[in-house]
Length: 463
Figure 1: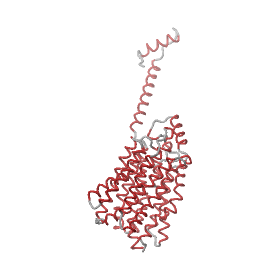
Figure 2 (figure 1 turned 135 degrees about the vertical axis):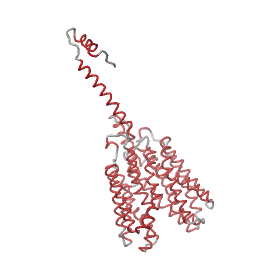
Figure 3 (figure 1 turned 135 degrees about the horizontal axis):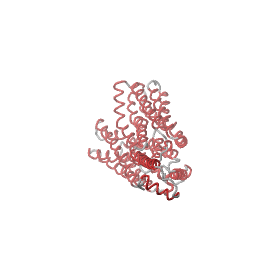
């Protein structure tokens, strides 16, 4: 509305309304009224522009999750085995003893505390759980620099695995899932780049530290690095949910109706007992266990297999690095695909692609076949780990996502450790990996079928 005529027109209007004897409205009030309207309109425009240009804080959460996965998972899972030769040479450990540390840690700490970690995340939030886990990982590495006996090593491995459980995939998957809904796929993909980059970088980093400072000091430096990076990130930047900052997932505009509706949806959709009784939960658990088991078998035996095919250790390492580098693409690109299509169909597709790529290992004497395998298997492997929490959240919401992911991760961890052992036993009996790769390919196809059979969630169960 435009106010014309200043005192005269505005005053005459009020004069007619109040009577002929009424005085015209004072010009100062008119000007003041116009100024208030302009200021109010300008303030609203400024606030709207500020909201539209300011980056959503959830992307800082993605950076925090990236760093958590880089240090607590990437360095520990891929970089720690670089210390094994030093343990064998300096401490007299056997190969079985150095490799059983994490297996013992998983059995003693991973299984019992996995579900507890999920319950803690759902109750007190991911932030405090991640901080606790980062502390355990960093301190255990610092103490390993002083170990002299096997029981020292085993005890510290249990402590390290407990830290991994608290600061690793479960907490960070829940953290990202609660900050994003519409863009959950790409956010999870960016976060999981941390794990992939940790796999590519950490072996070289650890090798360099051992070469320059010795293995004991290298362990201490890695532990110190974990504490110095992850503690400030957890304290200053990480927040468990967007509501702690008065925000909504994806940076949506806040409204009381939206918040109530969202809260109610998550509560109804995500009851742990209800989810565990559903067919969808068991299909996700079985499908992911089969495929993660197949991935574990390949990762554990890939370099040994290539050496049997006549490749040098250096060449085998290059193929392994290429496989891990290809996984980075899977973590990012598949996130965008998952945001546009049914997440469970995307997951089934890449499980099938991963399974089919195993057939290329039958032609491993040809270099081009190994490079092709590394590309397709690595890409599909990168898609796999980040799709599991997306499909779970799509089916059951996020209110109890911590407990559900803990159960699923404990389940597929059995496959991750068990199927490499099965592949090794088959090789010991037949002196060939041919049957092992066929079994893993079939497991991948069965896993893909299980995920494809997951029923589409109704709108009220999507979190």
